[in-house]
Image (cartoon, rainbow, N blue to C red; front, side):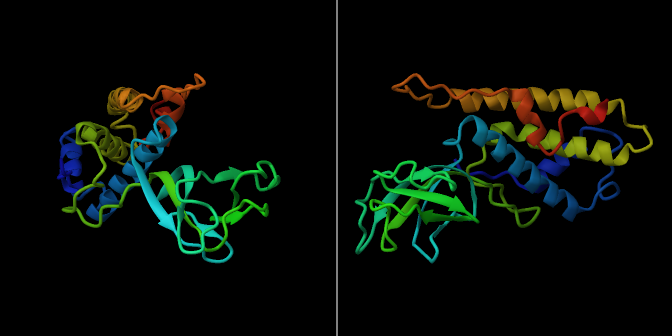
Length: 239
C-alpha cells in the first residue's frame, strides 16, 4: 500500500501532544520539516542494525575510476554481486567479497574489493572484477527526504509506526520550549512512550521474515543501545 502520510500529518499530531505546543511559535515549519527527515533517517539507521533487509534496495553501479562508487542512499551495504556487462570477467550473480583496506589479499582466491573514500576498489588479485564489470549492491537504504510539508514520506516507511515519528517531534518541541524547566514534567512521559514504540518497532523488524541460517548465526542487538540513534535522544535530557 502506498505511503500517504505527510510531514504535516506528523507535525500536527505532535502539536496535539501538549497544550503548550502553539503552531509556528516554538519552531518554524521548515525547521520541523527538516526534523521529520532527520527522525526518519534515525529510524532507518536503527532498522539497519536489527534487520538490514527491511528497508532493502539494490542498485547496479558501473566502474568509474578508481572503482565503483557506493550508492548515494546506502546506509548499510550487506552484499555485492557481479551484475555482468559486456567484457565482464566475473559472471553475473557471483558474489564479490569486501576485504579489509589493510589486507587486500585476505580473500585472494575470490573476486574481491576494498572500500576507501566512498568507493569500492579492486583488491588487486587476479579474480577481482575488471572495469567492464558492473556491480550490484544490496543495501539498507536511507530514507528519501520529504521535500515539502505535503509530500509523502519515504515509500518504504511503515505507517503503523507513525507514532514514533510523532513522539520524536513532540520531544523536540518540549525540549526546545522547556529551557526554563516549565515543561520538564512532560519529557519523561514522552520519552517513555517513544522508547516503548521503539521497542515495538525493533520487535517488528526482528519478526519479519526471520531467516533459517545454515550455521546458526543470529543477529544480536540491545534495543536500549540503539535508542540514541533516534532524533529525540537517549532520554538523558530528562534527567
